[in-house]
Length: 200
Image (cartoon, rainbow, N blue to C red; front, side, top):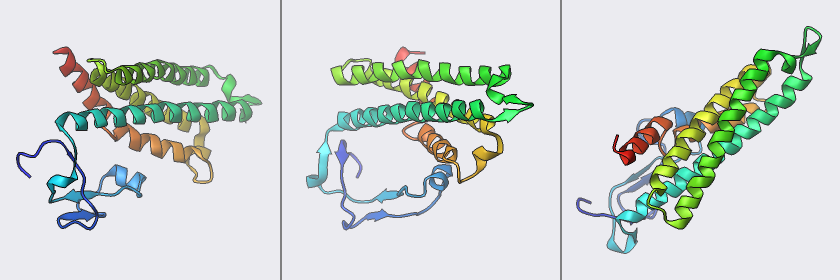
């Protein structure tokens, strides 16, 4: 495969292609067991999908899609938590009336509200073919990853013990947010990419 550039596809039945849970497994595999681990060992020239730049463009579209999902997940976790803290009572009052709870939820909402325009801006950059598109996608992915993970932690704290149970939907959103935050490059990787684009 040395010297082959571009984007390639391999069929499940081709020689040299193995799809299955092989080798090292990481946290994402545990949280998302439906993931496939794919090993490619051979290509045919007829299987080429595109040139070298196409893979980078596809990566940016994937990272942007994940950033948008993270903002949506964060908003859902925040909505669930706000609904819960309004109903859950402690010391005769809703726990949402406590200043510390309000401040945590406001902080999560603020992070999500900063991430959303970055996602919209990156989508515009990609759609218009702007030279800054890759940088804009990385800004969006880093902000969305951080916002969703922070919101997940705050949501879990706001819910208390019920947030840990599998009977309550919060765990689904928490797990998905953790997996997506690490998919298509984590926040640190995307911050490094932004720094590279800026020459820092």
